[in-house]
Amino acid sequence: MGAGELSGRDVLARSVKGQLRRVALGSALGCVHQLGEALVPVLIGVVIDQAVAGQDAGRLALWLGVLALMYVTLSWSFRLGAKAGERGAEEAAHTLRLAIVGRVLDARGGAEDGRLPGELANVATEDAKRVGAVNMALMSGIWAIAGVAVSAVALLLISVTLGLIVLLGTPVLLWLGHLLSKPLERRSEAEQDRAAHASGVAADLVAGLRVLKGLGAQQAAVERYRRTSRISLAATLRSARAESWQTGLVLALTGGFIALIALVGGRLALNGSLTLGQLVSAVGLALFLLGPLETFAWVNAELAQGRASAARVAEVLAAGPAVVDGDDPVAEPVRGDLRLRGVRLGGLDGLDLDLRAGQLTGIAVTDPAGAEALLRCLGRETDPESGSVELDGVPLTRLDPTGLRAAVLVAAHDAALFEGSLAANVTPEEESSSGADGDRPLTERAMAAARADEVAESLPYGTDTGVGEGGRSLSGGQRQRVLLARALRAGAPVLVVHDPTTAVDTVTEARIAEGLREFRQGRTTIVVTNSPALLAVTDHVILLDAGRVGAEGTHADLVRTDATYRTAVLA
Image (cartoon, rainbow, N blue to C red; front, side):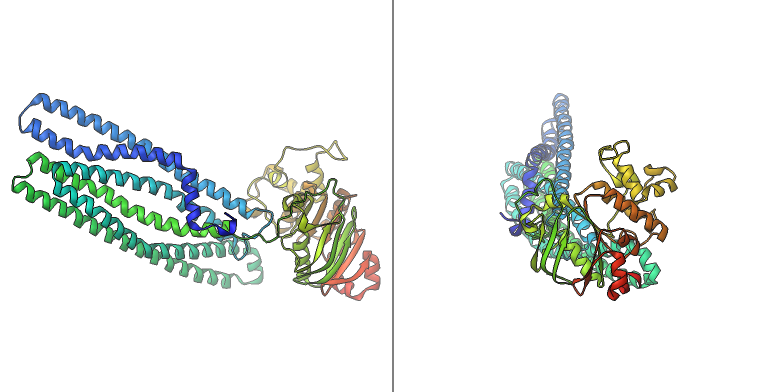
């Protein structure tokens, strides 16, 4: 089955199949528990008829011992069965989370299209949890069926009439419960959609709070979130009302069913068809049936929510890739020649561009949309609408996306830092001392080139200092330096950086420019920026104007000879 054909039902089936052993074990132990629970009122009836009514102390002690053993058995079977079920639910949710994260991180992209990051996080957490919980619900449903079956058999042995009422009435209750769960399923899906959207808006608001404050637009952003939150609250309340109606109606039907069993049992006892012990057993069994029947109501609600969440998970897992999947490996060693021919995408209008291997090339733009489109093409986040992009003479569409990501690293200016120490954000690996300057570790050289070592010196615990979620404990300039150090430390054969110094002062920017040139000496490096300090250290500068090459040369020559370049870079 192709990814595009994945449905919510497939997600549920795979989730259960992956935990089939635990579900089977938990179901078996749960059935033992239900058997014990159902036999307790039967044994109590036997004790009344054989020991209490006959005043036989020996038999009383014997049956009380059997009853105690029954309680021990059903107690342990419940504990072990519930443990297996809960573990199965958690394992299934975790496996599903890994699948969702794997799809989001797939080098071909596409899962994030049309979805805010907060929405994807909600799918990977809440929806995955609800789908995993279906394993526990399925196991509980099997327990309840076993309990009803045992009770029906016991009641048939006591009274055929009572047994038939249970056997015929339970399927009707299950069918009615399924019908009542349909509105809950629809409203649960709407609730999760709105909650995911609200999470996405909240994440965007928090991530851009500094910018919003700088623009004085925080009030407008807060109002937007309030509107989204109110819509999400309304969807949640509708779902809660649907769940409460479903639960209430099912419990009312269940209560009426139990009352019917008790009424028939009482009439049979009055006309002498049942002994006192059998009446006690019948009433006890009727009361026991409340548990399984209430479980059916809970299972219906869980399955309704699980189906809704599974459909949302399936949409993410089945999302089509943003780029086609090439099969050819990237040739080793990577020379780093990049060539664009007739590329049209966004702000690019038939762009022809040659980026030579081993050079530090600067690209200035008159339109930021052209820069964004170029970065998406070079990082292969999107394939051009027309034209081609080649690495060492091979079209990117023929190359394996994962291998291409390792060969060509596009470091966006708005990349995120992860919660953890500064050192862990620059390199998660064991420190390596490889490279031309072997007596200094590679990480230290990368941090020195980006002037991130100065950031570490200003922190209380140096590189071991935590940077907070998204690097929010650092200033904008400090984050940029750490991000550049991470990009340099990766050591990709081709490195593309976008505006890496917009938040640092001019003196630091000039030092970073020299450090970048020295660190990447002899390797293909492309700097997309309008910064004069960075462009001044490049080997070659290309000006993109109206989506095409407007001028080429050194920074000094273009400043002297090209008015458009002067306006773009020096204005």
